[in-house]
Amino acid sequence: MLRIAYMPSDFHPLVLIHADRIGVSEVIQALKTTAGSKSDEVLLTSDSANTNRLIINGDASEVRLVISKDTLYWQIPSDMASYYASELMAFNKRDEPSGSVLLEQGVLGEMPVKVTLGEFDDAFFE
Image 1 (cartoon, rainbow, N blue to C red):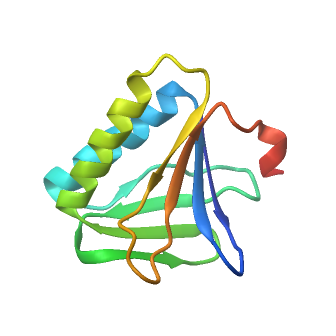
Image 2: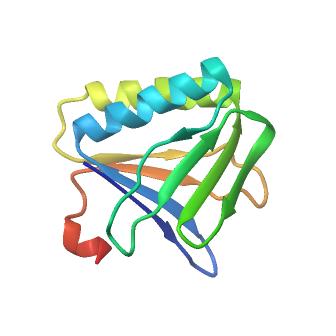
């Protein structure tokens, strides 16, 4: 299960990826694929009105997020995609029932991507 949403805010906007363990594994695999081939990878297409498609592009020189109506384009350097995949692998191996990882470099103007496990239910995205 994967739910992806852009969470606008005046002070701290972010992209929220909520998943179960299988969904986190899908994100890890997509990041690994993106890092290895520098190609676009669609993570999720959902019928839900408040969920987005996320396309990761590993052929970028810096982290950038482009937001359109129903699609988020996450452009990251391939080495960062590989690093984020390893961060998520360590997170997914833990036995805790819930938690989150913030994927960011900490540069000015960057929009972080937060991956959560067991912290929300589907009603949150409706």
